[in-house]
Image (tube, rainbow, N blue to C red; front, side, top):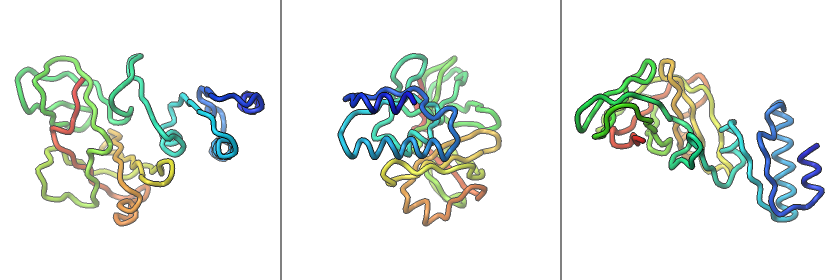
Length: 193
């Protein structure tokens, strides 16, 4: 009702906070389709706050993430709190059941992030210079807005990682929920905050 009331006012900007939080998938899809149809009929901006990353990638033209109340330079996937050991250069940190290899001079408490676009996706381990290679199972896939890419979620032994691939790559690799997958990325791809 709140969304319908806001649309009836024909505002130039529509602010929505978790608009599909208590809706089932069909109702959420209907809501987003209705918003897209309304925007096609008359241009207006829509700003949605959501924890549902799958919906965000499916419907948004632009995604911004907040971390600890500030605009984050990375998307909210693949963020982990770690304690960096002393020393310079290559370090190994535990994230749940996996060990991430990072390149940093920082020590102590930190947040590490792996941008989904920096993760190489394959069905089998491939020879490469990547220090981080994890085998797992696909747990979900979300097609980005306008169908250009796919966000692939995978369980890597109790730790969820998300990678971004093109729709063609997802098709060529025959990625599907439950299927085996390998995520690889360089130590230098891990961002440290």
